[in-house]
Image 1 (cartoon, one colour):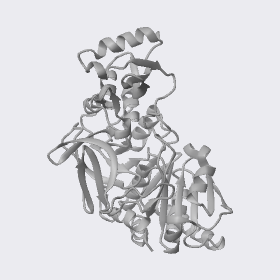
Image 2 (tube, helix red, strand yellow):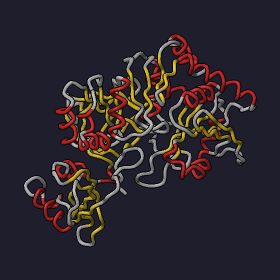
Image 3 (cartoon, rainbow, N blue to C red):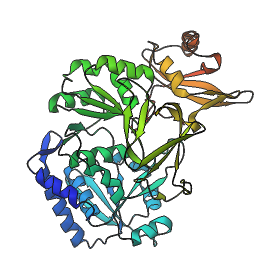
Image 4 (tube, helix red, strand yellow):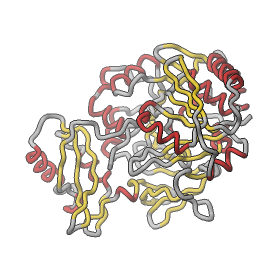
Length: 445
């Protein structure tokens, strides 16, 4: 089986704490018990290798046991969190799901779905009898794409021993970063601390109570953590590492993190659902520059855009054309600058604002606006303009009620001398709701 080695490691950790959920401790032995139970259910339900199985839930021993059992049975798993339940039927159609398992607490239900025979890339893969996984892109810039991974090369990277840490499972179960957290922790005998929700105060409370050592999070969440100052009311001394990725980190947020948590390592990660989480090394503490690589990974920059070739890359999309070139290179669409072997990421090329032929990177404007005491959060995006092609606009959360005309005037005054004229927002919109998705990633639609 593709996960024999992982099950063997978990058996060796049998008496260690594997998870903390709703205040209850779950051992590795307990997780293996759920795995065996689901192996029995798979047999009783006559679930065949190659069938596509939707797992709808979040981190729990029941879900983890089921996930391991379906992988061992050489099924294609489709993790789905409650955050995207509203798109469930459409995603199931794209993934050509045969059976779905809905988890509600300790209860679960297996439902058989009426599906036509498999088509395209998925048909060929299921005939191979190998374990697989389908993930969906966030769809922040369009309809979500279904990504098919062969599970064997995907999981191979976790065979090499890494640090054993108490990790907070901040990233969702169906996110590439969430799957990475789960597999990394289980393969190294660490503990996963599962949050009931993801507010800054509740996350800080869990760090204090359960002595969390590693917090993987998004820049949007870390900015909210800094703005709310929730960390001041809890003992955060157990925290050793904060990793951040999924979107560009503003310099001001990174500097503030380094100032507020001087004893914590800040590690930038890099990953895409299409490629997995890749090894990355920052140029230095608090530096936005990083080096991406590792065994089986090649990188190159073409016209300022990062391209990657990886042995653990996806097989392809189920509902979009093949994105790889003839040599296996994947265009990440991330605009970067180079400094020796290090790169700095400025964001997706599709997010760059073209103002009369001049490029504006949203993150460069955001990190200036985030220094304004009037603003709690900001998202910068382009808006069509008949003369310039696009203009820069800012959508903001304010710290106190304010007239929009007054705020626009303050924004322009603050930006003068800090930004070029064409970078200064022409329009400023005040938004009461949060500016990020349920995955704590900026909304740029």
